[in-house]
Length: 265
Picture 1 (spheres, one colour):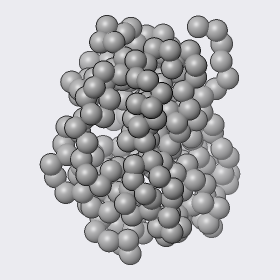
Picture 2 (cartoon, rainbow, N blue to C red):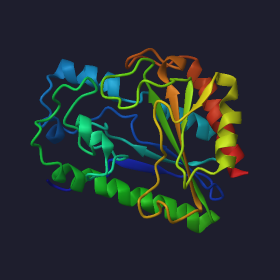
Picture 3 (spheres, rainbow, N blue to C red):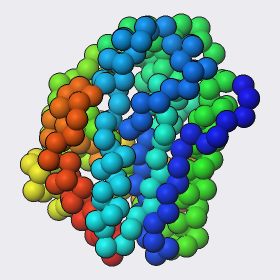
């Protein structure tokens, strides 16, 4: 494949901020060369994008950054996760391979065929996944060098009703789910998130989605890197699936900005 422009942006915040708002799943764009490898027709693809996209989360991060007293940095994926999913393991460690949703998806949210099962993921991994991972690693290293720490806050959303691809969809689905990592989510970060989102309803823990994204170079070894996943139930701020945002988005932006300020200290 020929060289391409970066499929992501690292948007600057305040020099003193350790916070990176990471938005990996907000976009719907799929380059034509990648679209050619997807077997869905155009209508089917639009419906799949409605279900799989964390709609309006880039806007949510933008508004929170504007409201925060000390602006966080933002790392935003500008391509759909149907190109590559930058938060998956690119190898057999990824449990979502069991439903055809590793770094390169071969199945849809409803377990239909998205790409042929024998699709070689390597060209897409090389072109999109690895540059993204390197850039995110550099972004965290930049915050460590500038402030002595880095805090990654993953901004996601999830549907009100479980979709067939979910491996752990039978548990609670609160308005806000906080995903944690045993090595990188300290109690004070979790407490700050619970306080920030308390006014939006129940705040759950690791259900229906768990974990938090940390670049592999730092994972399990660099305790100065904190991480938390914020999963927002979509009916709290938008019309499902894939519809417009509502007034709940502004309330969420205020809560996310409160979390950013608490973490920045």
